[in-house]
Image (cartoon, rainbow, N blue to C red; front, side, top):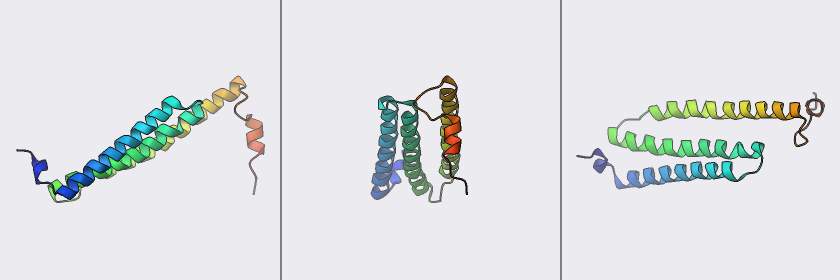
Length: 123
């Protein structure tokens, strides 16, 4: 017998909505990766799609399993913390590596290292 049959209708509909919204956000982020032109524009779409998609899917999962087990489920919180911490760090490391590479190659699309350092106002 399937335990999901014991789930209230409102919880099943809300779970389905949250999972679909999360899947759509992740899909839009993936399409942004394909459609945007430069590397610097491309890294933002999957990062935002991952964050919003992950949050929505995990909220749906937490609701579903909390309703089935009649107690709060904390696995989703741990997943959200780890993905929420690693996604921005990965974005930052990728962009810094690409910026370093582009500056070494003398790309005109990024500011020079000296110009970037002098344009930051000092307090």
